Amino acid sequence: MSDREWIGSAFVGIGLAGIGLFGALAAAAATLGPIAVPIWAMALAMVAMIVRSPLGKAFADRIADRGAVDELPPELYAELEELRARMVELEERQDFTERVLAKGDPHAVQGPGT
Image (cartoon, rainbow, N blue to C red; front, top):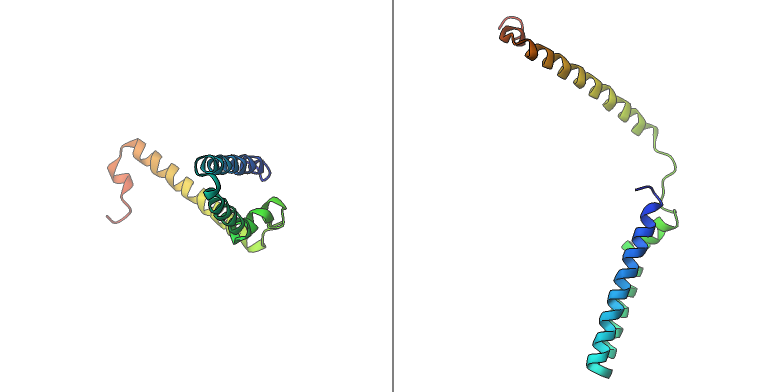
């Protein structure tokens, strides 16, 4: 998923959650009558708390692209190059080991002096 594709999925999820909450509150109001007013008030207070929480603010920043990092530090690129070099070395060692084992010579696997 790209950086912008997840936003549509997030809005669909939030919309479905809102429809479910509204449906549940409407069912409670239909069943309980005026006694459901405190239930509505508590539900709206919980929604307001979630929207104003750090999670809600982070979500809003992510949607507005204010939390995006434009450039990675050069140290990260250097570490990535080092990891690539080590991965290439490990692949070469694995290829060598596979060739030695494919020959079936048990003495070739042992190092010198063993």
